[in-house]
Image 1 (cartoon, rainbow, N blue to C red):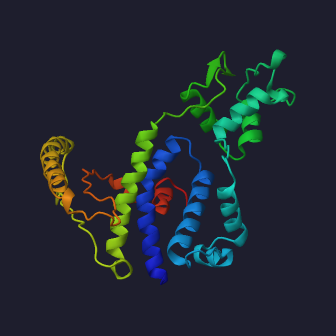
Image 2 (cartoon, rainbow, N blue to C red; image 1 turned 45 degrees about the vertical axis):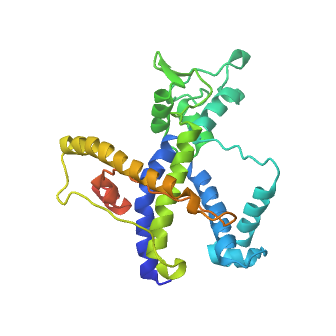
Length: 285
């Protein structure tokens, strides 16, 4: 694959990831957890689509994916371990764990100390030191703001008190999380198939209609109401089509799930910027 194609794919990947990463951060999924999941998917896809069936050649998978042989081995071993479930902690969780379990930051009976933000006394523990020990290079002020917003820490007389050992992000139901994966898979699988028709054969229906000059929030709200009604009518028509053809599916033949996914999208122009432009806008050169 040419470098120019790779560059374009990375740009497309960056754009697709932005709304997803926003959700992952909001739910406390760290980059390390995301990276491990990405490794697993790379190994799975390499084995399923680019390796001879029935064989697991770790060296070949490493070449295909760009992972080291050790990383490939770790992914495979971890996947095969019965009942394996990695317990990982976000940075706020590590800070709270240290505050509640490290004797340096505890008072009598193991109660977490009320800490000043900073202290000029080397003998007095402070929040900045706690963060340094349990969260590395995370900015202490940002960490404090996160903990306060989550209700895990409160300010008492100029000091900070841990009132809840857990750091809770807003929760999502398992069904919503499952739907996210299914929707993403369906959209990306069709888009990828249509882009790479030479490998997969003919493409699937993939069309778009949009406002040439954009819409105001008022018109977006009006369109949302319009498409809910008309879109529902069309989907019900398709449902009738499927129902009327059930008998035409030959018994014993392999079946695949199929359907039509309709989505009303609203683009945020800021998402089309780059990390470089963002850094320059904020004075980082």
